[in-house]
Length: 617
Image (cartoon, rainbow, N blue to C red; front, side):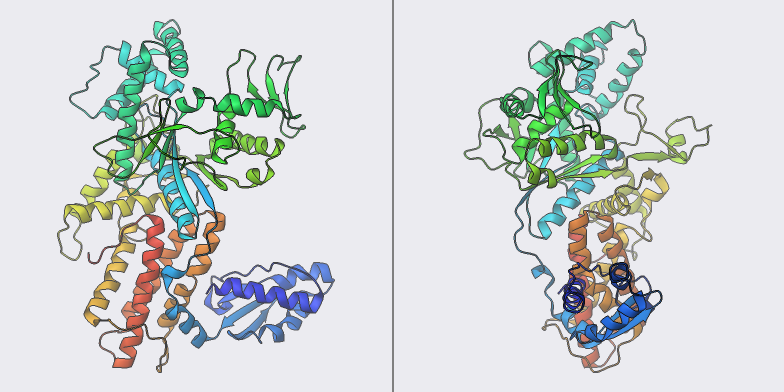
């Protein structure tokens, strides 16, 4: 039961009955225990409408709220807050009897979650991990609350950066086989080297760059085959490395499939039928196809006067397909790799190996793309709206996140000049400055291997799970719009607000359950007086439905990370103050039930965070 939702519903009913007003009442969970289990400022909101003091309104509401069967008492606090205390017996029974895995809403429809979208031109860095981990957890969350989730990774295999890596392979004289290093590391090195060459405005490589870019986009020319080979090797490296962090996809959408198919022409035809999409005949946009934006932020060029399409045009066509707004489908092939054992597909410009259409046709799309792309994302959304697809525009969600930068100490260790004494430094693939994702994984794993966890050596599989937990929570514990300043020392820590701490808390609970031999139904009745830490743990467990459903609306995964940490803290306080196995039989059974309920809820939260539970550590 989501007590917060129930309270909001009951409050709305009371307000309608008393004041003939319809309000969706906001109920919050107070930070301080003395402020109740839940609180609302609705009296202050109503005072503006009713022209009465908030205290008077709260006082009138109080006796009606006290009639709600699970409310213990109501306290009114200046200037008009209503603090709500829940009946302890009700709270305990509702929490301990609830089956966590059954707390899923009715099916909500299909959502496509697009994330990662790393340019296939070199090794990934830690900034790419933030996108992939955030996107993966959002996909897990939406699946958890009832959506049919399809996860896509857009591969820009026709972009300028791919042309740059191809240019370096063909013209810098560096062995293409790269026998002494991984292929993505080799591309990391040559990508930065060719960008040094580009600094010479007279370099012939700049001329070759333009030629290669045109060949790759059109799919015609001698360089296309080598470019395709480079892309496939890098995509395989990226997807394989991310699989090691628990990240999977359903479909890889190659940009070449978008630009070389009939999709754009089909969408272009529909665009031209709209009065908001016109061919300009004069002014600065003469000869361009433009989406008229009614003066709101300016008109948007889709097709330049030379016939080339801007990014937003391709992305708009892609989203028409995502939403099933056009009679079109891609060709598909299985992604073939010895490193990928799950069912992964990719779009293709050739014939399709897929017997039926299983991709696209979403009710909602969620795109995890960094904040620097907010304007293009807003224009795609605006395009859908202006072209008459208002529902799709409303269900087009851009989750913007702040990019990852390097701390001063980390930048210095990479050879960056930090004499300006800045607090953070940008990574730059062109300059070869950054922390590779694979290197971070190795460092974290090696660091954990040297730690003593209760004196027990960890096997390789367990070490990988702990390392994954550390990396994922490091990227998820901050709000997506909060910048992450990557620092080696912080990233390698396993103490405090970290993934390993959460895993350890779960393992501790499972150890108690094993020793207690709890093979009985959960006990919801109790005769002893609950101590403060028992009550705090029970209330924290009870907040899970509110956190789960609220995060599904906001898509701010940090709320679940923060909740998991608070829940683990409440459990560990309970563990140290409230004996379980040494108590009388009735108390022992009740507290074992509470421990089991804690383990269930924490496991549920960890699954969304992409952190595997461990039975022992």
